[in-house]
Length: 309
Ligand code: DGJ
Image (cartoon, rainbow, N blue to C red; front, side, top):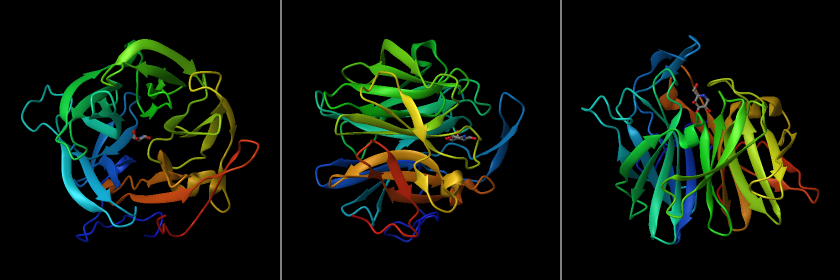
């Protein structure tokens, strides 16, 4: 699979799983992401700046045993076609779907960025399913802790506590909001980190006593330089360190933007979206191995191809 390009599933169709995540359950990898297989339209941000979009189709799921051959499993959450008041109506924004498994309830919880076409709502949506293959039942949309929330991810700590990481304060600051035990809500405890650093697209992992967060800058669909931050605690004083990308086009994150970091067989991998604002459904993907140095730095060189594990 050529990094930076749109990939095909086992039926030969384009993989529609943008802004996504890959989780493992049992012996199967599940890739969830935005199905952007519609026509491009133009909307406007609250600032008046034009932004391209496609109407919400839903959250797509693909499965694989080897992270290379992906079988389309359908939409695990579909947009609402009739009720225009629904937060997941086709006319709205649904981005960056992230799924975590809840051991206690033996179910799967899907968090996503929910917005109006002008990005003025700035909230999250939460859905649940007993099966990783869905269907997910949409529970609610909300503005977590009354803090605006745009790009986001969810992260499960080693003790089972889960957190919502979300760009807040008009994308100036990253908020970390603790989730309830069932992962279907925030529990009211939150803190702000990377204050005034203007980071989005958070992707996290934990390795040997350190938490790592890769983020992008805020330039809509255009690429910019990634940065990684570290902290010895999931909620603590996160410190921005450097751009983890190395080599040609490192300053543009190889023309991609972070979406998720997953672990496979003891190694960590960064997923990138290569947005094509003029034709979002053709936006490509990359999966790049992450090197972790002994002094807690991340190095992510470009690789032309994703060859699996
Ligand atoms: C950058 C974000 O990372 C994407 O998820 C999307 O919200 C675009 N901005 C919209 O311009």
